[in-house]
Length: 376
Ligand SMILES: C[S@@+](CC[C@H](N)C(=O)[O-])C[C@H]1O[C@@H](n2cnc3c(N)ncnc32)[C@H](O)[C@@H]1O
Image 1 (cartoon, rainbow, N blue to C red):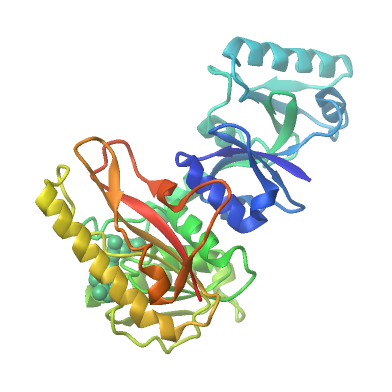
Image 2 (cartoon, helix red, strand yellow; image 1 turned 45 degrees about the vertical axis):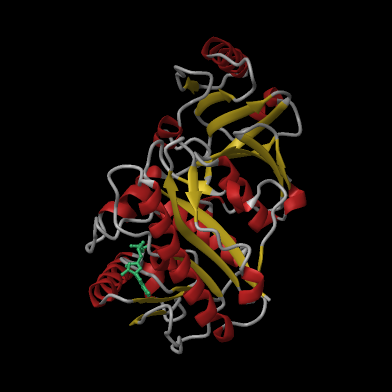
């Protein structure tokens, strides 16, 4: 089956996430925002970098809609082609509504103020998620029926309702945690995800929700407690995490540069390393060099320490710092030249280079640069 996919705010990162799950040759980038994926199964909820996805319709849209089960139809239409407009989208939706009405069907159209329905509106109306709640996605001659929109409500709840939060440590968005886990696990069904800089435990939370056992460690006693508290809270409110066969959770104190992880066998590593102190402006050159060197020293020491403790083939997806420079670009840790000596290979992707893999908001001072390695 083919899926038409609307990529997230960092499209290159979304593409490599898709590659990790479906293989490079099954992911085709059509525009900066749109990709086509060939797969039998599209596990939408575990993808952090995807806004919408739809199963490509083989017949005509008209035939597809005519065969929907009985009952009222809620219909939205989003055109992602170049040259699309709100007016054209509305006319197409209206045409489909009139055709359906002629067959005696009751249709409610979702108004669109743009060529595409916003993800908030699509999500709010449960388009693609409930029977006969349909969103047709178009890109040129390709039409697809939505299977869902990123669940912003669930992400916000997981993020904001956690009992232990720490603005200073910074909070990894759950979406980015999912991306890191997908890059490390490549969709493996089971296993243990280690986060050796676990902070408040966002990666550990997302790992358990994705069916993995979670193993976290952190240098700070306070953070170990925070992670434990957040994971207890998640388990209390998630019945499937209370079952006897639910993923296990281990959290312990440890300096990632010399710790021996023993509580569980580590299958994957997904982590946001220490990003340094928050900054209020782009650092001057001397400060930047110092910050970069500190981050490289930490990363190098961690990679050296963990190398003999993980099996060959184990993958590590790491969010590392990259700093805003005065020319508006971002420059991050430079460790890729050394990784061979440290016993790792960098994973290569078809749709992006490692230096493309930035996650940031406009003008953010410290961005995250994602590095994906495989133990030799
Ligand atoms: C950027 S934060 C991680 C935040 C985390 N992703 C979360 O969800 O809250 C980095 C964490 O690394 C920890 N840390 C710093 N140096 C460390 C080291 N050498 N070994 C282990 N943890 C360290 C800090 O205490 C901090 O909690």
